[in-house]
Image 1: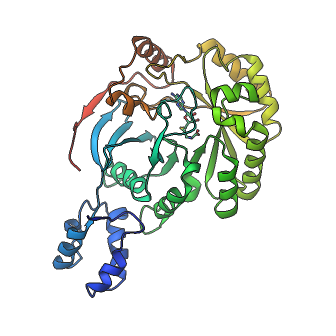
Image 2: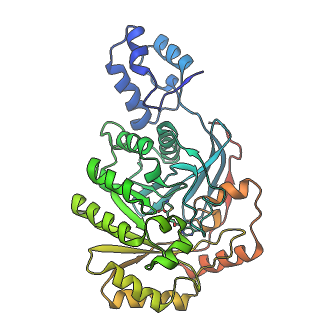
Image 3: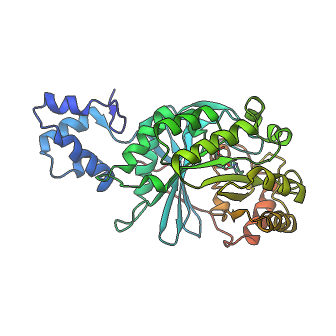
Length: 376
Ligand code: SAH
C-alpha cells in the first residue's frame, strides 16, 4: 500500500536517503505541496524526473475524493470528502472581504451528543488522521486562485477537536510552517464543547491558539440537556479551564452560544449568561441555529433574538452574532454528510432555513452543485 504523503509517519526522509537524495528534498516537497499547491509529484518540476517517478510509486498525496462540491452565492464553498474507508467528512471555505477562512473537521461523526447538532446524531466513527486533516486544507486551498491564500482556520467542522489533539496538533503545526501555508497561530481557532482535560493540555503544551468554548446554556440543568457531556463535567469546571487558558494565552476567549427558539433564548437565559460571563474579557458569539433535517429545534424569532442580545449588550458583554454563510448549501457541518447519506430534509426544515437566510445579514443563497463525484 502507498504511504499518505501528508501523514507525519510517511517515511519520506528515509526513502530519500535510500535513493541517495539529500534530506532537503523533503523540504522542497513540502514547499511544493503547501506553498505552491502542487497536485502531484509530476508538478514538482525542480525534482529530478526519476526521483519524481520513484516517489509517485510509493507515496500518495490524495486519499480522499470529492463526493460533492457546492457553492453558495456569497462565495462559501463546501466539500464533502470521501475517505479511503468510504466515510465522509465536510470542510468549508468562507469568503469575507479579504479573509479566506476554512472550517475543517477533526473526526468522522462526534461523540459529544449535542442534541441539536447533525454531526453527532450517529455518534463518532473514528478520529481523522493528521494526513486527513491536512488534506482538507490542501483541497480547500486549491479552490482559491493563485493570488489568494487561506488566511484563517477554524476547527469547527465535524467532531470534537480536543478529543483528537494527538492528530490535530501536528496538522496545525504544519499549517503554520512559514515555508508552507504560513498561517499564524493567532488566526487559528479551535472550537471545543469544553473538555477541561484537553483545555489543560493546550495550556501546558500550546496555548497560542484562539480557543472558542461552546456553552449554549449558562446553567447546568439546561446545558446537560443540550450538551449531554456536561453531565460529568459541569459548567464550573469548564469555566475554570477557560480561565486558565486565558491566563496562559493572554488571548481573548470566545464563548459560543447557539440560540434555539423557545429553549435557551429568553431574557432570563440571557441574564444567566451575563452572570456566568461575569467580568471576563470574553467575546460571546451568538450563533443563529441552522435547522437540521429530522431534528425538532428551530431558529428563534427575530424578536427574541433581539431581546436576548439587548440584555447582553446592556450588561456590557462583548457580543457578536455569527453571520450566516452558506445556509442553502447546509454549511453547518454534519448536515451535508447526512443528506448525502439519504436523510431527507424535512419541509419544515427548509422553511425555517429560508426564513433564516432572508432575515440574516447575508442574502439567500442558491445551491450550485459542482463536479459531483469529481476525481482528485
Ligand atoms: N465540537 C466542537 C466543534 C463543533 S462545531 C464544539 O462543540 O465547539 C462549532 C459550533 O457549531 C459549536 O458551537 C456547535 O455547537 C455549533 N453547532 C452545531 N450544530 C449547529 C447548527 N445546526 N446550527 C448552528 N450551530 C451549530
